[in-house]
Length: 193
Image (cartoon, helix red, strand yellow):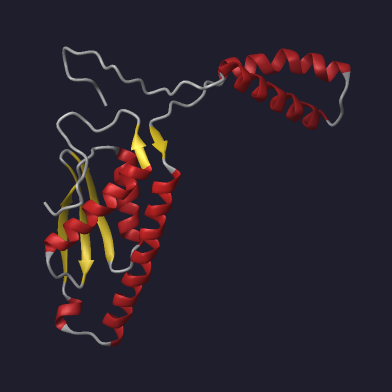
């Protein structure tokens, strides 16, 4: 995310490694082991050629820029919630198929605003919605951030929006953008909009 005009951003997108020299030496050692494995033997010629090739390889390969911090406990909470959604939604769809009523068969499209215009967060939310039986993500927009969801058994659209807001909140806790919330937006509260 870019900083507001006139102010430089104090946040960096690259998280510094705790031990960058140790990490580079570990990479070089693993690459040298791979080098020996590719040649099929440990010899002085392979050692010398590896010492020449590996630093060049490390100079060309830059570590990827980290855009998100993964919080394992929050990721576990998201996974547990998602599994619960799979079970309850599968049951609801099975009941709809076995005992259809006009209310259960009622379908519609609900636009659910997102609080964070982060592409990874929006993708995870959209995929979770699509993988849940009875719902399907039709569109993901970035301006303003929102997802359009087709819902089977649509009752109150505000309940759908609240469910998507809660899902987004769980994803944001699990996959926190490094830059934090975008200017002008706030963390989701889990309530309906």
